[in-house]
Length: 296
Length: 277
Image 1: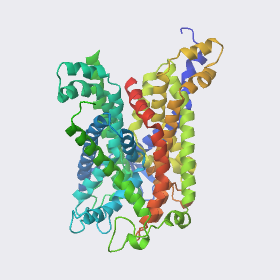
Image 2: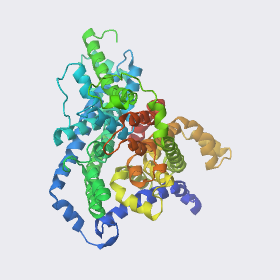
Image 3: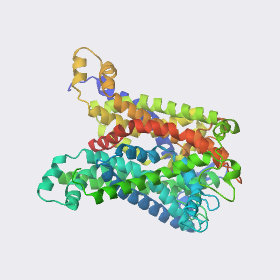
Image 4: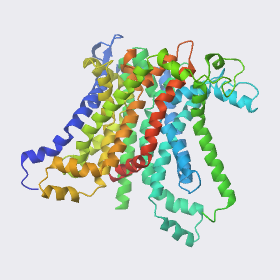
């Protein structure tokens, strides 16, 4: 190990070169560009007209819709990740029980995970249509409702349905992460606990939860990133309408950049998004480091 | 199992039943709607099932829009991205699993952090880059981007797989005179085959389902992948849901089959790779 030739020392970097080159060009350059554009004056035609400091940020923040959109993003991320995690955890627990037809149910649960988000968003948009949607037809035929319901009557209702679709597509990932965690738990723990007279809640709190926590944490962190950055559902179902009320940061920045021709302000919204995610990542890392410190 | 109370069993089956119904309902609607005629689609007296099963929809889509083109584009983009992601990802994951070098934890951290940057938040920058490289309206552009944004996951999954295999065999091969490359291709890769197949399929599915980048970069109808192409049937004042959903089924079913094949390996890889870090 001591007298490694320069070639040997460079070898690991050469192995990583193709991957790193690809990521630098396709990810790092756009990141740098976004930061540069966020601080540039840009014409409608997309021509950079020079540095303008924090003007783009100021004009984004000055718009009254922006704080509403920030709040939406927060509600969207917390509601979708929170409810998905709870439902996914319960479903994972259930699917870990032996019962007839378990293989079938596990296969069914995979479906929403494998299907393109744009297709799922379109299906839900169709099903919830007030005039000919499949949900109204079904409920009417079953006699549950008397007349068609306008599911998108208010922006709050629209947004809630968008959250529901978000939950629908996110649950499978959590379920399978929980399942993989549960499967690694030694059955002897439960047997020992039963001998000691532990009930369901004791076992859940003292064995299951602590041992599933690592997989659950990975799932939650990844989901926060995905859901925060999730674009197709809201863009397909409402495009932020009515009156920009159902936007989240990413759909808003898309509209700014590609419908309104305001690349500079869109880049500023991107940067604000990075900062929020960086804070989340920082909190996560501090928490992980603390947890590791406790264990060792 | 034998001592489970009947009440608990009923609850379990009821819960599982509801989950299945809610999950499968959209797929049921997709199929039913794809089999309706356009007159029934907007008729006043809607029915749950079609009055007349319009199987011809599944044939008509291929002539109503360049659906075959969309399908081939999806295959090219997903296939190309998968190939590129693996060709770049395997050596990188190998170095990160088997070699010791300065800055290794920095590179691992960078790979994990890169997942924070979804294409959509970088879209303004990506668009500018692709214009400069003349890669808008190009399948190659989509391949490069999809491969890059899947590097983190590919490296993560592959490294987890490599770490789970003992390095003894490779060392034995090296003693027998194999170089690093040969010990990788002849010894490690065959043993890591399940993990590699999982990664291949996972990247393929991600690229196949990708929508945002393609929506932004591709305006030429002949170059659209399925996810963007199906919007042809979504007109401004007239939506041909039956064609849209018939095409969606062709875009969905192959991927669900692939996913079912790797489901077990994928989850094990995701969490173990992450926790081992």
